[in-house]
Image (cartoon, rainbow, N blue to C red; front, side):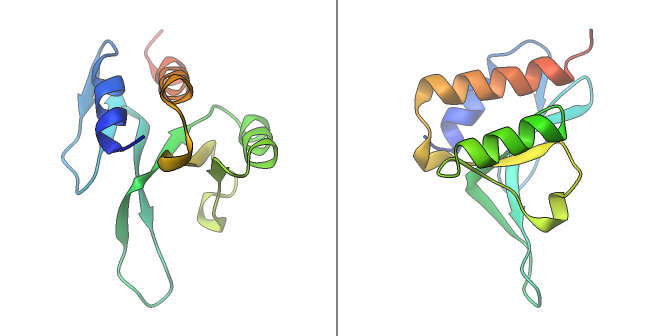
Amino acid sequence: MHADDVRRIALGLPGVEEIASDGFDFRVGGKGFVWSYPERRPGKPRVIRTDTAVLFVGDEAEKQALVLGEPDLFFTMPGYDGLPLVMLRLAEVNAERLKELVTDAWRMRAPG
């Protein structure tokens, strides 16, 4: 999967807006639910990685379950400690799972 697949799925959901960025950045009700990974390395400028999506997952337990259960798909970084966000390697995920993940992230952030 690629950034265009994320864009197609996200924009197919109700109330979604895309925020201008160097990659992709989608919000619902003013809250982000999926965006390009802004990779930061010490001493280097930030790089927007469109091959990696940051997904809202709701809580730390869900995050840890994904990272530990499917390390080929998901990872996290120290800057995301304590945040309900996980990184997804887009090249490793299939279309059905990507749709499920993006839709779940949207559902958790959409106004009730």
